[in-house]
Every structure is written in structure tokens, then in C-alpha cells.
Length: 143
Image (cartoon, rainbow, N blue to C red):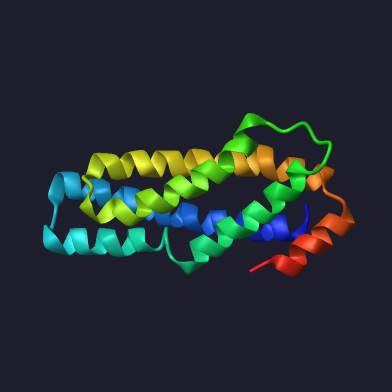
């Protein structure tokens, strides 16, 4: 698989670890919450899902997605939805501090589903259909 796709996958792996930590903290909060300290930790952990690294990651995925759309590849609907997902995650993540735990669960579920679609549909299609020249162009724009 292309080195840039491997970089995106590594980021997903790191995010999956963070999501598991958030899920564990949410479970703890439902059963034995430490009140304000748990919420402070939760919001700190959630901030990792909408910082500069997340923004750059999505920008880089969009470079690849747009290049893939310019090929003759058959485009799965999930690939077409990725841009909308990225925009929604940005809006939702910015509002998480005001939301209840069940909405955070929803966000986590959608985020995991989004990463799954990228890794199992989008990345393989990009790896198969993008030319070396397209990868070079993407690499020049990579953040």
C-alpha cells in the first residue's frame, strides 16, 4: 500500500486507541463517576479528536479523495460521503463539551464507522486506481 495511505492508517490506529480510552472512561462515569474530574479528563481526551493533527489528517484524505474522483475508478457511495463526514466531525467535535454521554457514544460509533469505510473501501480504491504521478502531486500538497 502507498506510504501516504500507511501514514493515514497509522493515524487511525492512534485515534482508535484514544476512542477506546474515551469509551472506557464513559463506562466508568456511568457506574462510578468522580464527577468534575472525570468530565475534565473526558473533554481533554475529546480535544485530541479535533485538533490540528485531525484537521491535517482530514485535509490529506481529501487530497487523495479528490484525486480518486478524477480517475475512472468506480466510486463507492461511502467514498463520496467522506467529505461530508469530515465536515460533520468538525462541527460535532466543536460542540462535544456541551453534550451528554449518549451523544458522545453516537459520535464515537460514527467515527469508528467512518474510519472503517476509509480503510476498507476508500484507501484500497485509491491504492489501486491512483497513478504514480497523482501520488507525487498529492505528496507535494501533503500537510
